[in-house]
Amino acid sequence: MILALAGGVGGAKLANGLAAVLPPGSLTVAVNIADDFEHLGLTICPDIDTVTYTLAGINDTKQGWGLEQESWAFLDSLATLGGETWFRLGDRDLATHVQRMLRLRAGDTLSAITTDFATRLGIAQAIVPISDDPVRSFVMTDEGELPFQDYFVRRRCEPRFVAIRYDGAESARPSPALRKALDDPGLQAIIICPSNPMLSIDPILAVPEIGARIRTRSVPCVAVSPFIGGQAVKGPAAKIMAELGLASTPAAVAAHYAGVIDGLVIDNADSAADNRPALPLHATDILMRDTDDQRRLAGEVLSFALGLAG
Image (cartoon, rainbow, N blue to C red; front, top):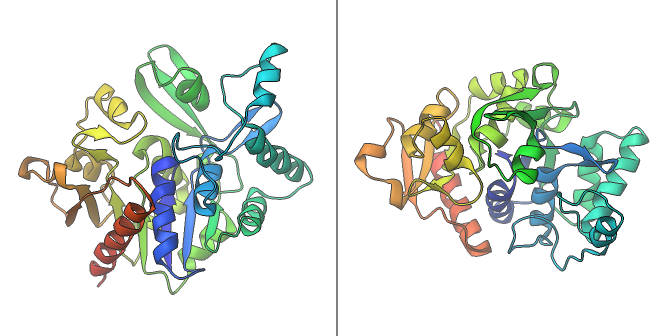
């Protein structure tokens, strides 16, 4: 049994590789919910949907989010009527949000809905929200505090990042499936996917029971760096680190996850001695260009993590 912690695109890619190389039913992917929000009367769960679509093989591989063969008639009509179109909702993707909202209003939990959607899409591994309680990110910027999606999508991360808070995290409880994964006597390793540390992974660790359980685990925990040559593969991670006065290096990633990880997987481009933290490292090509790369990297990460056991 393997537990992976994931955010959106980068997390989904490695999770897809892990799902491919592990036996069915032996992987739990616990997904960030702090970027979920209400939009057009719907509950949008970007990271859960990205992971779900990717593991189902129906994601848009070019843009990294949304569904393949998408159309935009709804959004075009909404624009004609003067509606908000800054958050892109495709016609096929819209069905996910509508059905999720209807079931939430009927009293179903986000965990139950996510599991049902994954089953209906033929996914053989477990995808679980970190909690059924709401956790929401708010970004403090040089222009004031912004709800996460306003910062991330509407403003395209343009304001300078100052700090972030995870509203609701202190009172949130782990989802039943995540608690089950943490309690599983067969759990062999925890893998932190190459998601943005502050935007995607820290909200998970900010839930007190989750953070405490991972820090006091009895199995290896390894992270995959989100940086290659000091740059983020996708997203604003390097920009945020620079605005906080931090370097986008393996040493900085290891320091960020101090007390959480036992080892770090880095790219060959970042293996210079001055970047190397004082913990076990595995250097390889971490760029996941296609599903073959995803499987290759997943296999290397698993071997590295399991090699740290005992």
